[in-house]
Image 1 (spheres, rainbow, N blue to C red):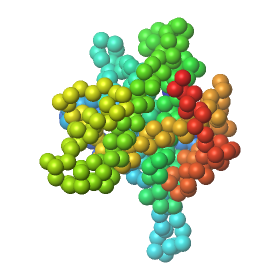
Image 2 (tube, rainbow, N blue to C red):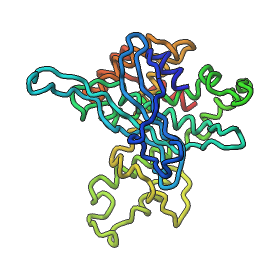
Image 3 (cartoon, helix red, strand yellow):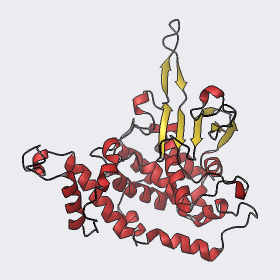
Image 4 (cartoon, rainbow, N blue to C red):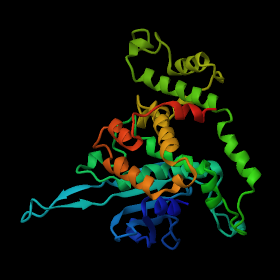
Length: 338
Protein backbone atom coordinates (compact mmCIF):
# COMPACT_ATOMS: atom_id res chain seq x y z
CA UNK A 1 0.00 0.00 0.00
CA UNK A 2 2.77 2.45 0.85
CA UNK A 3 4.62 1.62 -2.36
CA UNK A 4 1.44 2.12 -4.38
CA UNK A 5 0.70 5.44 -2.72
CA UNK A 6 4.18 6.95 -3.06
CA UNK A 7 4.32 5.94 -6.71
CA UNK A 8 0.87 7.34 -7.52
CA UNK A 9 1.14 10.59 -5.58
CA UNK A 10 4.79 11.50 -6.00
CA UNK A 11 6.26 9.33 -8.74
CA UNK A 12 8.58 7.74 -6.20
CA UNK A 13 9.71 4.13 -6.22
CA UNK A 14 10.31 2.37 -2.91
CA UNK A 15 13.13 -0.06 -3.66
CA UNK A 16 13.97 -2.65 -1.01
CA UNK A 17 17.70 -3.08 -0.57
CA UNK A 18 19.93 -5.36 1.45
CA UNK A 19 20.44 -4.47 5.09
CA UNK A 20 24.12 -4.43 6.01
CA UNK A 21 25.26 -5.92 9.29
CA UNK A 22 26.38 -2.55 10.61
CA UNK A 23 22.92 -1.07 9.92
CA UNK A 24 21.12 -3.47 12.26
CA UNK A 25 20.02 -2.50 15.74
CA UNK A 26 18.08 -5.70 16.44
CA UNK A 27 21.11 -7.96 16.85
CA UNK A 28 20.31 -10.79 19.24
CA UNK A 29 21.68 -13.68 17.29
CA UNK A 30 23.93 -13.01 14.31
CA UNK A 31 22.67 -16.18 12.68
CA UNK A 32 19.08 -14.94 12.65
CA UNK A 33 17.87 -12.80 9.78
CA UNK A 34 16.90 -9.27 10.69
CA UNK A 35 13.23 -8.30 10.68
CA UNK A 36 14.17 -4.73 9.77
CA UNK A 37 13.50 -3.76 6.18
CA UNK A 38 15.43 -1.08 4.32
CA UNK A 39 13.93 0.88 1.43
CA UNK A 40 15.57 3.42 -0.83
CA UNK A 41 13.23 6.11 -2.15
CA UNK A 42 14.00 6.99 -5.78
CA UNK A 43 12.30 9.32 -8.27
CA UNK A 44 11.04 7.17 -11.12
CA UNK A 45 11.53 9.79 -13.85
CA UNK A 46 15.22 10.52 -13.39
CA UNK A 47 16.49 7.99 -10.83
CA UNK A 48 17.32 10.67 -8.26
CA UNK A 49 17.88 9.23 -4.79
CA UNK A 50 15.79 10.91 -2.10
CA UNK A 51 16.73 9.08 1.07
CA UNK A 52 16.34 5.86 3.04
CA UNK A 53 13.61 4.56 5.35
CA UNK A 54 14.06 1.63 7.71
CA UNK A 55 10.95 -0.26 8.79
CA UNK A 56 11.18 -1.97 12.18
CA UNK A 57 7.57 -2.99 12.53
CA UNK A 58 7.23 -5.96 14.89
CA UNK A 59 7.85 -6.43 18.62
CA UNK A 60 10.80 -8.18 20.20
CA UNK A 61 12.24 -8.40 23.66
CA UNK A 62 13.72 -5.16 24.93
CA UNK A 63 12.40 -3.06 22.05
CA UNK A 64 10.75 0.36 22.36
CA UNK A 65 7.13 -0.61 22.84
CA UNK A 66 5.22 2.18 21.11
CA UNK A 67 4.98 3.47 17.54
CA UNK A 68 7.15 6.35 16.40
CA UNK A 69 9.08 7.94 13.56
CA UNK A 70 12.74 8.65 14.22
CA UNK A 71 15.02 10.81 12.12
CA UNK A 72 18.37 9.02 12.04
CA UNK A 73 19.88 11.74 9.87
CA UNK A 74 18.23 14.98 8.79
CA UNK A 75 18.41 16.31 5.29
CA UNK A 76 20.39 19.54 4.90
CA UNK A 77 22.88 21.36 2.77
CA UNK A 78 26.52 20.69 3.65
CA UNK A 79 29.53 22.73 2.68
CA UNK A 80 32.00 21.69 0.06
CA UNK A 81 35.66 20.97 0.64
CA UNK A 82 38.19 23.54 1.80
CA UNK A 83 39.31 24.00 -1.78
CA UNK A 84 35.70 24.61 -2.93
CA UNK A 85 33.98 26.24 0.08
CA UNK A 86 31.21 27.80 -1.99
CA UNK A 87 30.04 24.48 -3.37
CA UNK A 88 27.34 22.60 -1.48
CA UNK A 89 25.79 19.19 -1.68
CA UNK A 90 22.66 17.82 -0.09
CA UNK A 91 22.82 15.34 2.76
CA UNK A 92 20.01 12.85 2.16
CA UNK A 93 17.74 12.01 5.10
CA UNK A 94 17.61 8.64 6.81
CA UNK A 95 14.42 7.75 8.66
CA UNK A 96 13.32 4.84 10.85
CA UNK A 97 9.69 3.87 11.41
CA UNK A 98 9.44 1.83 14.59
CA UNK A 99 6.19 0.08 15.47
CA UNK A 100 4.97 -2.97 17.38
CA UNK A 101 2.50 -4.45 14.93
CA UNK A 102 1.24 -8.03 14.99
CA UNK A 103 4.19 -10.26 14.03
CA UNK A 104 4.22 -12.93 11.32
CA UNK A 105 2.83 -16.26 12.50
CA UNK A 106 3.90 -19.76 11.34
CA UNK A 107 0.31 -20.97 11.06
CA UNK A 108 -0.47 -18.42 8.33
CA UNK A 109 2.67 -18.89 6.31
CA UNK A 110 4.75 -16.40 8.30
CA UNK A 111 2.65 -13.53 7.01
CA UNK A 112 1.93 -10.57 9.29
CA UNK A 113 -1.84 -10.03 9.37
CA UNK A 114 -2.57 -6.56 10.72
CA UNK A 115 -5.74 -5.18 12.24
CA UNK A 116 -7.21 -2.07 10.68
CA UNK A 117 -6.14 -0.06 13.70
CA UNK A 118 -2.55 -1.23 13.22
CA UNK A 119 -2.64 -0.20 9.56
CA UNK A 120 -3.86 3.24 10.62
CA UNK A 121 -0.95 3.52 13.07
CA UNK A 122 1.51 2.48 10.37
CA UNK A 123 0.24 5.08 7.90
CA UNK A 124 0.26 7.76 10.60
CA UNK A 125 3.97 7.16 11.17
CA UNK A 126 4.52 6.88 7.42
CA UNK A 127 3.11 10.40 7.08
CA UNK A 128 5.81 11.64 9.46
CA UNK A 129 8.39 9.63 7.54
CA UNK A 130 7.45 11.21 4.22
CA UNK A 131 7.65 14.66 5.82
CA UNK A 132 11.23 14.01 6.93
CA UNK A 133 12.18 12.25 3.70
CA UNK A 134 10.79 14.73 1.18
CA UNK A 135 11.69 18.05 2.79
CA UNK A 136 14.64 19.94 1.31
CA UNK A 137 15.91 22.59 3.69
CA UNK A 138 19.23 24.34 4.07
CA UNK A 139 19.48 23.62 7.80
CA UNK A 140 18.96 20.29 9.53
CA UNK A 141 17.05 21.86 12.43
CA UNK A 142 14.34 22.88 9.96
CA UNK A 143 14.18 19.53 8.20
CA UNK A 144 10.92 17.62 7.89
CA UNK A 145 9.08 17.26 11.17
CA UNK A 146 11.19 19.96 12.82
CA UNK A 147 8.41 22.38 12.16
CA UNK A 148 5.85 24.29 14.24
CA UNK A 149 4.32 22.15 16.98
CA UNK A 150 0.85 23.28 15.88
CA UNK A 151 1.43 21.83 12.42
CA UNK A 152 3.71 18.80 12.82
CA UNK A 153 0.89 16.23 13.06
CA UNK A 154 -0.81 17.41 9.86
CA UNK A 155 1.03 15.10 7.39
CA UNK A 156 0.58 12.09 9.67
CA UNK A 157 -3.15 12.73 10.12
CA UNK A 158 -3.54 13.19 6.37
CA UNK A 159 -2.09 9.73 5.69
CA UNK A 160 -4.61 8.21 8.11
CA UNK A 161 -7.42 9.25 5.76
CA UNK A 162 -6.21 6.72 3.20
CA UNK A 163 -6.92 3.75 5.44
CA UNK A 164 -10.56 4.87 5.60
CA UNK A 165 -10.83 5.42 1.86
CA UNK A 166 -12.92 2.75 0.11
CA UNK A 167 -10.81 2.65 -3.04
CA UNK A 168 -7.54 2.38 -1.14
CA UNK A 169 -8.92 -0.29 1.18
CA UNK A 170 -9.88 -2.32 -1.88
CA UNK A 171 -6.23 -2.16 -2.93
CA UNK A 172 -4.59 -3.10 0.36
CA UNK A 173 -7.38 -5.07 2.05
CA UNK A 174 -7.04 -8.42 0.33
CA UNK A 175 -7.01 -11.93 1.73
CA UNK A 176 -3.42 -13.05 2.16
CA UNK A 177 -4.10 -16.44 0.53
CA UNK A 178 -6.86 -15.95 -2.04
CA UNK A 179 -6.32 -12.28 -2.92
CA UNK A 180 -10.06 -11.62 -2.60
CA UNK A 181 -11.22 -8.17 -1.58
CA UNK A 182 -13.06 -7.29 1.60
CA UNK A 183 -16.81 -7.89 1.04
CA UNK A 184 -18.61 -4.64 0.24
CA UNK A 185 -20.91 -4.84 3.26
CA UNK A 186 -17.98 -5.40 5.63
CA UNK A 187 -16.08 -2.54 4.05
CA UNK A 188 -18.98 -0.14 4.41
CA UNK A 189 -19.48 -1.18 8.04
CA UNK A 190 -15.79 -0.60 8.75
CA UNK A 191 -15.88 2.90 7.26
CA UNK A 192 -19.04 3.78 9.20
CA UNK A 193 -17.40 2.62 12.43
CA UNK A 194 -14.91 5.47 12.21
CA UNK A 195 -17.30 7.88 13.88
CA UNK A 196 -18.53 5.53 16.61
CA UNK A 197 -17.96 7.34 19.93
CA UNK A 198 -16.11 10.07 18.01
CA UNK A 199 -17.48 12.83 20.23
CA UNK A 200 -16.18 11.07 23.34
CA UNK A 201 -12.78 10.67 21.71
CA UNK A 202 -12.61 14.38 20.86
CA UNK A 203 -13.77 15.37 24.35
CA UNK A 204 -11.08 13.13 25.82
CA UNK A 205 -8.46 14.79 23.63
CA UNK A 206 -9.64 18.17 24.88
CA UNK A 207 -9.22 16.97 28.47
CA UNK A 208 -5.72 15.60 27.80
CA UNK A 209 -4.68 18.81 26.04
CA UNK A 210 -6.02 20.95 28.88
CA UNK A 211 -4.22 18.79 31.44
CA UNK A 212 -0.98 19.16 29.48
CA UNK A 213 -1.37 22.94 29.18
CA UNK A 214 -2.23 23.27 32.87
CA UNK A 215 0.66 21.34 34.38
CA UNK A 216 3.14 23.11 32.10
CA UNK A 217 1.58 26.47 32.93
CA UNK A 218 2.03 28.71 35.98
CA UNK A 219 1.94 26.52 39.14
CA UNK A 220 -0.23 29.02 40.99
CA UNK A 221 -3.02 28.29 38.55
CA UNK A 222 -3.55 24.83 40.03
CA UNK A 223 -1.28 24.37 43.03
CA UNK A 224 -2.79 27.11 45.13
CA UNK A 225 0.29 29.29 44.89
CA UNK A 226 2.66 26.63 46.18
CA UNK A 227 4.86 24.05 44.50
CA UNK A 228 4.38 21.89 47.60
CA UNK A 229 1.84 19.27 46.58
CA UNK A 230 0.70 18.87 50.17
CA UNK A 231 -0.77 22.37 50.18
CA UNK A 232 -2.10 22.23 46.63
CA UNK A 233 -3.67 19.49 44.54
CA UNK A 234 -1.92 16.57 42.93
CA UNK A 235 -1.71 15.85 39.22
CA UNK A 236 -4.05 12.91 39.86
CA UNK A 237 -6.62 15.27 41.39
CA UNK A 238 -6.30 17.58 38.41
CA UNK A 239 -6.63 14.75 35.89
CA UNK A 240 -9.76 13.47 37.63
CA UNK A 241 -11.26 16.95 37.86
CA UNK A 242 -10.78 17.61 34.14
CA UNK A 243 -12.45 14.34 33.23
CA UNK A 244 -15.46 15.09 35.37
CA UNK A 245 -15.77 18.69 34.19
CA UNK A 246 -15.67 17.46 30.58
CA UNK A 247 -18.39 14.87 31.18
CA UNK A 248 -15.98 11.94 30.87
CA UNK A 249 -15.96 8.80 32.97
CA UNK A 250 -13.09 8.52 35.41
CA UNK A 251 -12.02 5.52 37.48
CA UNK A 252 -11.21 6.74 40.98
CA UNK A 253 -7.89 5.80 42.57
CA UNK A 254 -6.18 5.44 39.18
CA UNK A 255 -3.41 7.52 37.61
CA UNK A 256 -3.39 6.83 33.87
CA UNK A 257 -1.57 10.10 33.23
CA UNK A 258 1.59 8.72 34.87
CA UNK A 259 2.21 6.71 31.69
CA UNK A 260 1.17 9.53 29.35
CA UNK A 261 4.47 9.72 27.44
CA UNK A 262 3.45 12.75 25.39
CA UNK A 263 3.77 14.88 28.52
CA UNK A 264 7.51 14.52 28.02
CA UNK A 265 7.84 14.60 24.24
CA UNK A 266 5.02 17.07 23.60
CA UNK A 267 5.08 19.09 26.82
CA UNK A 268 2.54 21.95 26.55
CA UNK A 269 1.98 20.94 22.91
CA UNK A 270 -0.30 17.93 23.05
CA UNK A 271 -3.15 20.11 21.78
CA UNK A 272 -1.44 19.98 18.39
CA UNK A 273 -2.88 16.53 17.69
CA UNK A 274 -6.40 17.93 17.76
CA UNK A 275 -5.40 21.25 16.20
CA UNK A 276 -3.61 19.61 13.26
CA UNK A 277 -6.69 17.45 12.63
CA UNK A 278 -8.41 20.60 11.36
CA UNK A 279 -5.69 21.17 8.75
CA UNK A 280 -5.53 17.53 7.62
CA UNK A 281 -9.31 17.35 7.26
CA UNK A 282 -9.30 20.49 5.13
CA UNK A 283 -6.44 19.19 2.96
CA UNK A 284 -8.14 15.84 2.43
CA UNK A 285 -11.59 17.19 1.60
CA UNK A 286 -10.29 20.01 -0.59
CA UNK A 287 -7.43 18.34 -2.45
CA UNK A 288 -7.73 14.55 -2.27
CA UNK A 289 -11.24 13.39 -1.39
CA UNK A 290 -12.93 12.92 -4.75
CA UNK A 291 -12.30 9.46 -6.17
CA UNK A 292 -9.28 9.63 -8.46
CA UNK A 293 -8.04 12.79 -6.71
CA UNK A 294 -6.97 10.62 -3.78
CA UNK A 295 -4.24 9.21 -6.04
CA UNK A 296 -3.68 12.25 -8.24
CA UNK A 297 -0.06 12.89 -9.23
CA UNK A 298 -0.92 16.55 -9.67
CA UNK A 299 -2.33 16.83 -6.14
CA UNK A 300 0.54 14.78 -4.74
CA UNK A 301 3.19 16.93 -6.38
CA UNK A 302 1.48 20.10 -5.18
CA UNK A 303 1.42 18.70 -1.65
CA UNK A 304 5.11 17.83 -1.91
CA UNK A 305 6.14 21.22 -3.35
CA UNK A 306 3.85 23.44 -1.31
CA UNK A 307 4.01 21.64 2.05
CA UNK A 308 6.39 18.74 2.58
CA UNK A 309 9.44 20.21 0.85
CA UNK A 310 9.62 23.17 3.23
CA UNK A 311 9.85 21.23 6.49
CA UNK A 312 9.96 23.92 9.17
CA UNK A 313 11.49 26.63 6.99
CA UNK A 314 8.18 28.26 6.03
CA UNK A 315 5.20 29.52 7.98
CA UNK A 316 2.54 26.74 8.02
CA UNK A 317 -0.16 29.35 7.35
CA UNK A 318 1.53 30.26 4.10
CA UNK A 319 1.97 26.61 3.10
CA UNK A 320 -1.65 25.79 3.78
CA UNK A 321 -2.90 28.84 1.91
CA UNK A 322 -0.76 27.93 -1.10
CA UNK A 323 -2.05 24.34 -1.06
CA UNK A 324 -5.71 25.11 -0.38
CA UNK A 325 -5.93 28.35 -2.38
CA UNK A 326 -7.36 30.07 0.70
CA UNK A 327 -6.98 30.20 4.46
CA UNK A 328 -7.76 26.86 6.20
CA UNK A 329 -11.27 26.41 7.55
CA UNK A 330 -12.70 24.25 10.31
CA UNK A 331 -15.77 23.09 8.34
CA UNK A 332 -14.18 19.91 7.00
CA UNK A 333 -13.16 18.79 10.46
CA UNK A 334 -16.67 19.28 11.78
CA UNK A 335 -17.94 17.09 8.93
CA UNK A 336 -15.69 14.25 10.13
CA UNK A 337 -17.49 14.29 13.49
CA UNK A 338 -20.92 13.58 12.05
